[in-house]
Length: 206
Image (cartoon, rainbow, N blue to C red):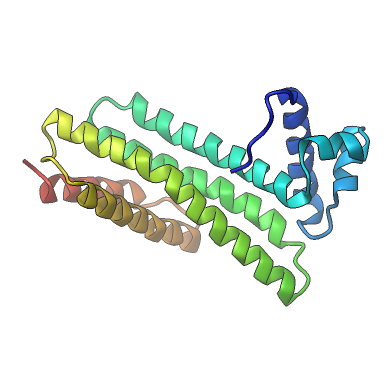
């Protein structure tokens, strides 16, 4: 993840990242330069390079912020739900809906891909983002599972069991997401999430 000095102005950092995100959406990753971003915010190159040393570092920071915003939304959705079943269901539905927003962001980027080399770099970027987000997301899933243990809904789970169950839940949601994309509809997803939650309860009950 990108680390920033405490002497750097957070409001300017946000301004830079928002400008970069907008330009990436309009023109694609390959065409946007640091000079473009500097012009967009009305600052010189030296000011921009003080905050971010390269376009890759800027993109990394923008992605990191977006991932943490998504994670905060997922956590908030789970926190608002009263019990374990509701928390897990709320997380699953919020996860699928946020995936739609991520899909829209990716779509605006890949519209500008013009050759196989750019496509290769783009797919590498997506895979990297996927792995990074998963590392952030798994602790949230584990906290929901631990809530189920505290409520007496689930038996005590080993670390390996928690990791495996988190993987299974994420894999199931990946399948749900493909179904939503295929049908362009959430029809049937609610009952599927309820059944997924019931399977977790049945499989790991005390």
